[in-house]
Amino acid sequence: MAKSKGLDDRSQQLLKILIESYIEDGQPVGSRKLSKSNGLNLSPATIRNVMSDLEDLGLVKSPHTSAGRVPTTIGYRTFVDSLITVNPMEEAQMQLLNNYLKNDPQEADLQEVLKSASNVLSSVTHLAGLVTVPKIDANEFRQIEFLPLSNRRVLVILVINKQDVQNRIVNMESDYSIAELEQAANYLNQTFSGRPLEEVRQGILNDLNNTRLHMNEMMQTAIKMAGKVFEDKADDKNDFVLAGQTNLMDFEELSEMAQLRQLFEAFNQKSEILNLFDRSFGADGVQIFIGKESDCLPLKQCSMITSSYSVDGKIVGALGVIGPTRMNYKQVIPVVDVTAKLLGSILRKIS
Image (cartoon, rainbow, N blue to C red; front, side, top):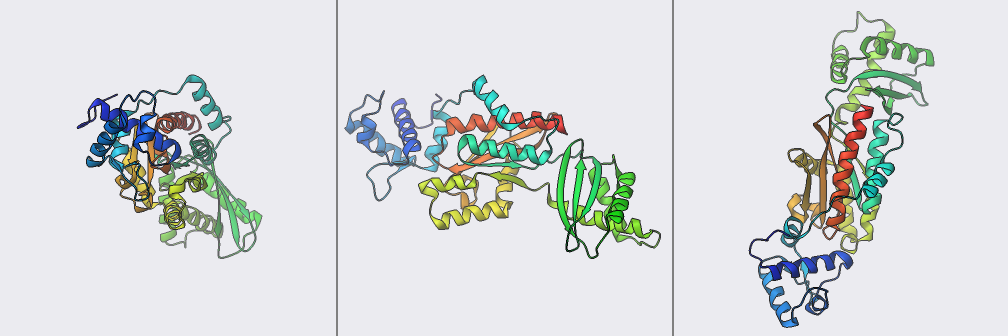
C-alpha cells in the first residue's frame, strides 16, 4: 500500500476501512463501528481523534443527520490512488467475461459487438456501461442496398469493412420502385466499392453540389439517396452505446428525481460524456473521474471509470462505467481494463 501524503500508517488504515465500509452499505461510519473492525487495534478515543484529523484534511465529512463520516471526493481519490491494490482478474473470470462478450467474431458486426460490450460492462458491474463507436480511419465501403418502406421511406443496408453491417431509414421526397432502388445500389457498388469511406462520402457530397446535367436519372437517384445516407452518418463517429442506465436508480444517493433527470439528460445529449471519453484517449490504462473531478454537473455524485481500446496498436475508442462515487472500485477497475483489451482483440478480427 503506497504512502499517502500527510497520512501516517494508522490514518491510512482507518481511512481505508471507513471507505470500504461506506462502499459496502452506504451508511455513514462512526467511531463505534470502526472500533469493531477486524485488524484495527485502536481505542474509541484514538479513533475519534484520527477521524477528526481526516476531516480537517478534507478526506471525510460529517452529514448533518449523522455523527458518522462519509468520504469526500479527495478521500476517494486518496483511496483509489494509494490505499487499494487492484489484483489482475483470474483466468476463469477472464474466460467468463470473454464468453459473455462474444459469440463468433466471424459472424458478428460492429454494432452487435459494441452492444455486447456495453451490456457486459453493465451486467458484471451492475452500473451503467458505455462504449464509444470506434474512430477507424481505414473504413472501407463494401456494399449498399436499398429496400422500399411505406411513406417514402427507404431502408438502407450499409456494409463497411468486412462485416460491419449498419441499418438506417432515410426519408425521400419521392417513391421508388424495387427496380429503381436496385439500379441505384448497383451503380453505387460498382462506382465506390473498395474505396475509403471518407473518400466515398466526399465524392458523393461533391456530386450533390455539382451540376447533374451530365447524369442520367438513375445516377441522380443513386447519388441523391447516398447523399441522404452519408449526410446522416456525419456524426456517427461521435457516439456511444449505452446499457444499464436504470441500474443507477437502485442507489439511494442517485434516486432523487432531479438528479436522475440531469443524469439521463446527459446520457441523451451525449456531448459531456463524450468529452470525458476524449480525455481518456490521451492516457494509457484505466482513468477514474470522481465526482466534481469530471467538471460535469450531472456527474457530481458519480464516478466514471474508463479505458481506451486499441486495434492493431492504435487507440480507436474508449469504454467505461458510470455509477455512484461509492462504487466498488477494486472490482470495477479490472472489469473495465479487461473488457477494453477483449474488445480491441475482437474488433481486430472483424474489421
